[in-house]
Amino acid sequence: MTTLLSLLAILALSLVVIIPLLERFAPKANPEQQAKISRWILPLVGVMLVIALIKSAIN
Image (cartoon, rainbow, N blue to C red; front, side, top):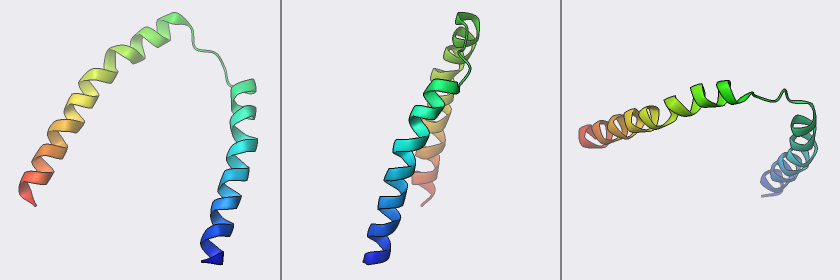
């Protein structure tokens, strides 16, 4: 139990440190890149749902 709590504490601490650094130094995407990415999100979610449905039907 102590190992689990220490791992969770380390994970939480690293997230508190890493996320602000990523937000500060990550390159900003321009609107063109955001439009390209957003065009792919819904079809990929649909494909993932179909794959999950097939996987659950097989098991």
